[in-house]
Length: 382
Image (cartoon, rainbow, N blue to C red; front, side):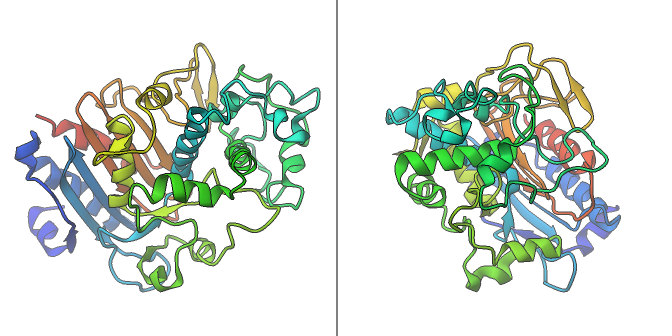
């Protein structure tokens, strides 16, 4: 895509606090990033793209381009559009768990069976809170995790009235701690733990202890109807989620993927983690908890993630520490991504927070939409 074609496209600008040069960033790389996203949109690999970059606590880039809705006319994606963040919700669940650890209401090596009776079996009684946080419990990997040709649906157990027994049905994949098996259902169990320990619904605890203190005013489990016209939708299923009751009694808490948010709100959460648990003088979680969440807890634990063999998976507490070969991010970078697709990356060494939404309804992993933008972004650091 030429510079002339780029100028003809509509690129919306959001609020920023600093010029790129003021925070040691090459502004020319933002043009490279814009052209990269616009090319993917023109090739119909992406519906739209938006991103926010901040360094030293100052936002220096905040843009959007493409269509807000992928299956009908809905106007442009805006920098403050709301988007389903899917599994990035797990990072919020992990912070909520660590807050309960800080309050003495849970401990990481605590057997889940001490709170949830269905885990008190020969197969499951050795599973701990730590195993759920690190995806090493052995229970219920996400459908398609092993590239199985006929994956079980989410409705096979997780949406039933007795969803806990549904999650635990059948054999475990491994003994706890032996193998990394990505499990959204395991985070659903963490959501149930939060509810039982606090006496509050998972949604309410996350809102009261994280969203409200951070003033994440456009982050919701259930987007208010008057904001539905500002939500980015890649497929009709996204629209159906907007009217779902996420607090339905007896159903699995959506602790593995229930939140909708914006670039700016997600930046607040990421900046809080970068600043060791505080945001604008407000303490959300303790420094030592953030340090625990962002250091590797798995040693020689293998993973087989959607076809990729990983001999030794690096993982924190609810946060990914694994870098692909050839990525330009600093070794200390931690992150979480979500299907659909969104990404939150935090680099303490460079004091950089990067958030981007790259919605698409196309199946499968598209490296150009996640890996390539990361390399372009990090290559602009002076």
